[in-house]
Every structure is written in structure tokens, then in C-alpha cells.
Length: 112
View 1 (tube, rainbow, N blue to C red):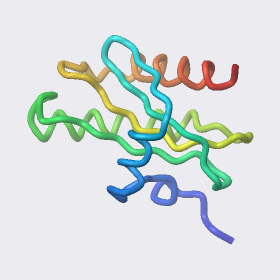
View 2 (spheres, rainbow, N blue to C red; view 1 turned 90 degrees about the horizontal axis):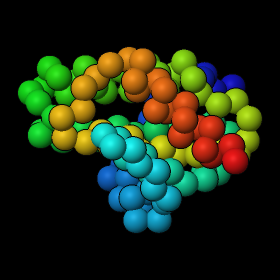
View 3 (cartoon, rainbow, N blue to C red; view 1 turned 30 degrees about the horizontal axis):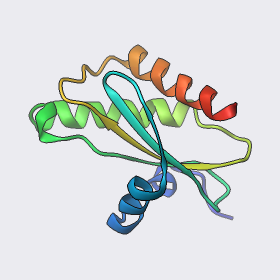
View 4 (spheres, rainbow, N blue to C red; view 1 turned 120 degrees about the vertical axis):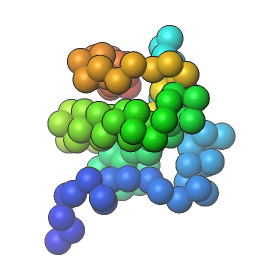
């Protein structure tokens, strides 16, 4: 049986990411874009793309850590399952509560 760790839930292949951007639906707010598409797996998966315009490596990695943690804590357990691509805009301020609210509002929009 496969363990349900975060490493099993990431999308790392360029092919999958480009397919997600081209074929997926887009949900946006003022500082965050989320691309998503239904997948054939039994779990949600995610990828995070942070541009160099968001700051130095320390700030970019902090943004990614916050997104991963919020995704891990708020993952959905019922089908349909999706692949997500989180892409924060330029000048995105990595506040955990703000990221949580935006991701949860995206998930609630998907449920509709």
C-alpha cells in the first residue's frame, strides 16, 4: 500500500505542468492564480511556481513552504480529485492566513 506523503502529491514533470497550464481551468484573485484539472488518481496533487520577481531565494522558498503546508493541512478527501498549480503574483506577501483563505475559497468554488 502506498504511503500518503507529500512527495506522492507533487507534480514535478514539466510535461504535466505545461499540460495543466494549457488544458486546465484558471481561478484567479488579485495576487494568486490557480490552474486546476481533474486527475485520474485517488488524491489531489499540486505544483507551486514562484517567479524570481517575487524576491530572493529565501522569500521564494518561504512562499513554497507556506503553500505546501496549507495544501497538506486542507487537502480534500473526497472525489473528484484535481491537479493544482499555484502561481503567486509579483509582490505576493506570504502570510499563512491569507494563503489559507485563498486556497479554501478556491476549494469551495470547486465544490460548486
